Image 1 (cartoon, rainbow, N blue to C red):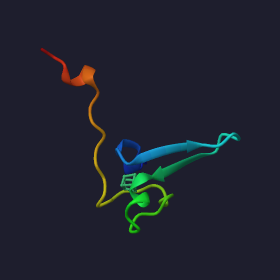
Image 2 (image 1 turned 90 degrees about the vertical axis):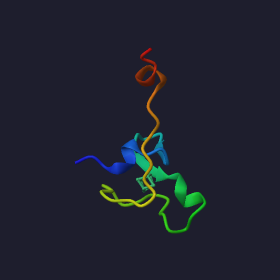
Image 3 (image 1 turned 135 degrees about the vertical axis):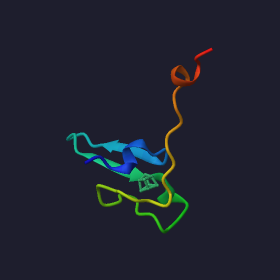
Image 4 (image 1 turned 60 degrees about the vertical axis):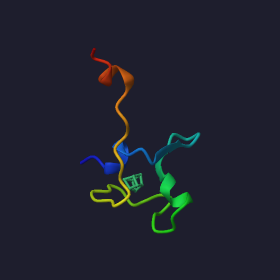
Length: 61
Ligand code: SF4
């Protein structure tokens, strides 16, 4: 199942040279309640904020 982090605007994806992939939570930089690398998958999170839709999704005039 997908993790909430994948659609959260606080996510920073980190890919190592060996192609390991880590999901880093940017909230951890300003709030100690969040882990830098939260255990996955995250299913509930008080800090979750959905990523903004892209322009193409909103520009339907
Ligand atoms: S705020 Fe929560 S959902 Fe968003 S990236 Fe951090 S841990 Fe994931």
